[in-house]
Figure 1 (cartoon, rainbow, N blue to C red):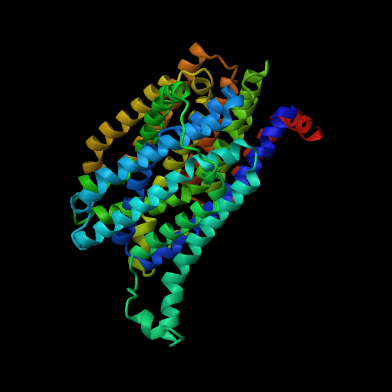
Figure 2 (figure 1 turned 90 degrees about the vertical axis):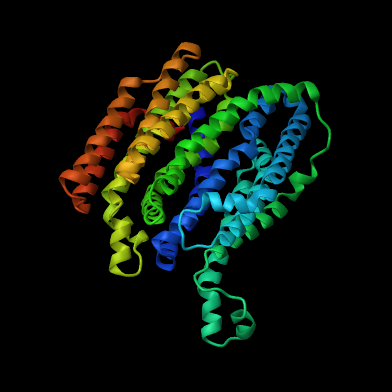
Length: 500
């Protein structure tokens, strides 16, 4: 039990440093939907979707690989760090070489509306290439900080990054117009270059925040030495490339639907559809926050616990409580959706109703994230057993599912098709990971109990959202009943953990 308590403590620390930045970013959503039209907001999320799609290629699976080889060769920590960081520097060089000469062509290709000039898209791409390069530089230094057990430093840098990003957003969207309107010092100079409601200020804020983050991890960057352990590097690359493909496939599942909406729908409606879908998807951010916090705490913990003779029981116990927690959050978000929807309340009844018309996708997306969280928990088996090829197979099949069915159904059903397909892809990945994992690296998960919690949470969400028409009082009563029931059945185990 002490091991589970230790894991809970680590996850709580990473969770806090993950939740705070994501909440701060989440509070930018109402700012954006009030500042930009649905069309412009669609462009914003299209750009970030492309960035998210490309980031795994730059990271090249080196974060997971770093943890694996740090525990595999604890006497060669510096070699592991040098190899990992060197690979990412090479990937950044390749990115710059193959993108910068073709910026204008890429801009014309990714455009999702006919109102924004191609030159604007080209500028956005240049800003995002810079952001991606700076963020990639920080991947291994952040892994080094986590591997050394310094969540405080990790959290401080992450929170500082998001505070800078949010602060610059608010200053450029609200602060600068205030200076101009009130004739404050510098108003005339600022008025000469400032563009009201310009989307590019969001991206500039991101670039500045990323640049300052690089400066904050400078001690870790300076510890890099340009030398490579060739034998270890070959082993690391053999381990990492399936992780890379798996991560890339996962990002396809997460973001390709938004990109395909922009490409497959009419140019007259694509931007609006992407804007509505991505805005409503923001409501599910709280569940995704928990999943990411879990991953940050779980990955180094799972590797460090692999040699424990009771590791299988530990992983199974963690899965039990993870399922309960994620189901409670799932129900809680849906129960309070009538409050959360005000975070995407735009100016004017027409724009407001456009955004709120997409609320029906939220429970579907949340259930998809629930399945994703379970898959991330299950994926420990192929990482610990050095069978990362299975991660490639599972994520690859999930990506194929996403691509094929989105291409088939988006033209007819729009973003509703994307939501259901996302759920289907993550469910498929969870099932495959469980079946193959039990064959190759058995872990004694309590399948019946976990399925009971998952299916009962889905029933309660259906009752709350559909049968009782999103009534906030009924929804929260069902939430309390579910939580109390779960605590009743798990009380002995939970109390034994807290007593130690």
